[in-house]
Image 1 (tube, rainbow, N blue to C red):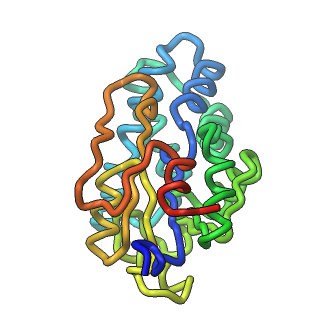
Image 2 (cartoon, rainbow, N blue to C red):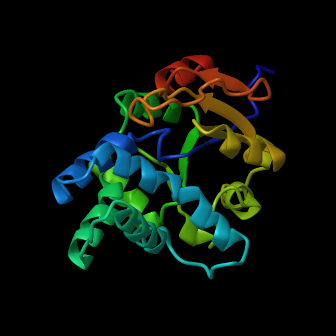
Length: 233
């Protein structure tokens, strides 16, 4: 058996791995609040992403969808930057996450990988958000796994193993694909295979660790390189 013949499903992180959130959100912030440093504002907003979801998973906050969490953290960042964002502008900025651009290799890479594997989004966004993102970028997902399906956020077990259950396969038959090693470490802990994707520009030129881990099954430059390494047509 070849190294990956037992893998049936590829599960993809979306924000950063498949899409360029920094470019998309920086543009939206620049248009909505031209007086602030859009790049700094975008990075500050993104850094609040994991901590507030962690509070939900820890039980400190009740379950709330990602748009609600992003709205709260947006207003926190606006206060930090000394500006006030009205409700209409906040809605536009939160919804901008639905139309962030895919990386140039995303569409062709996913198309190649889909020739051999079932490809799924596995993201902390909602099904609606990820569907709009897919339509905007022409991502050809076979299935969209949003956090509202299980009312949990990665790195919770319910997300990774929930996808495996829905796909009627063992966790070891699913490979998590991400540019965030913490995501892959969690997935591996629940029995999934892992593939690290380099995205050195994810934070718009700010430093990012793309070294991955020797524990990953695959380390690839991008999704086209991943297709090569997984022998996709």
